[in-house]
Length: 132
Length: 132
DNA sequence: TCGTATATTGTTATAATATAACGTTATGTA
DNA sequence: TACATAACGTTATATTATAACAATATACGA
Ligand SMILES: [Zn+2]
Ligand SMILES: [Zn+2]
Ligand SMILES: [Zn+2]
Ligand SMILES: [Zn+2]
Image 1 (cartoon, chains in turn green, orange, yellow, purple):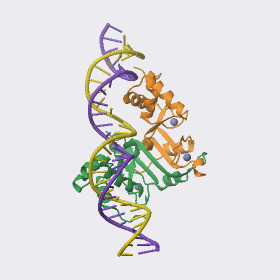
Image 2: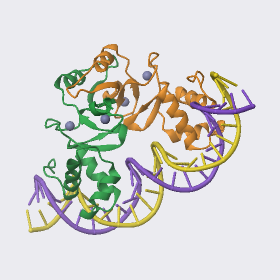
Image 3: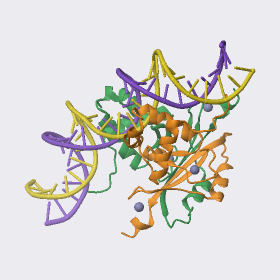
Image 4: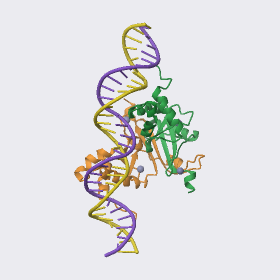
């Protein structure tokens, strides 16, 4: 069986909802909002999310247990992700900075471990919140 | 009231247990193991962990929902953390690399956001697992 | 087009992680 | 002492995520 080319029904429903949001969503919030489209149980959402994360359409914000659509056209898979997170308003932005990604993708420490993947989360105050 | 100088009873118990482990522990695993020392409920463990994370004695591995003792003497607070995680054996190592931390602490993107904190998790295969 | 492997779905139940809310006790400071 | 803050203890509950099982759909080679 070939690598999946098209999204399945549930995967499409979940992805469309997450893409509309423009901000990270919690799995159960997704569930409540796609119930009218037929997804009734948590597992249906989690399974769609798992696949979408695997193929890089969605990223998980680990520190928030939330899911956001990829805004980065070259994120073919989620193997090199970086986000900025406002600790006040919780706004999350995907960082698309080629210097940073090159630096991190090439990073080696003295452990002899070669990294195939990373996730970086920056925290601070966004412009708006800084000026309050 | 002054900034806390000494750890409280529960904080000491939890920290000692996590330090002995040499690997990330789950909150409920900590709970089961410190019950003989008098901590009976999840909240007692979570509250101790919260404080220990706040003061930098313990870090949370966000992608694993697990807690590990700081191995980095200059991690006064957990505002700049980096870890390597083996996706096969789940071995976690705190990365102590001053170039990396300088690079990330000084990182600025075009969002106008100044970051006060970051957490970076690298994934891959450790030496042992690579040679299997 | 039949057989087979894999992916996806649907469903119920349950596991694992984390916090709310309440009252009490301890500790530091004036 | 009086006051403020931190830590504690306890019960209940919220939130996040997966196990287990059966059914259906899709891709692909023989
Ligand atoms: Zn992306
Ligand atoms: Zn903000
Ligand atoms: Zn540390
Ligand atoms: Zn390993």
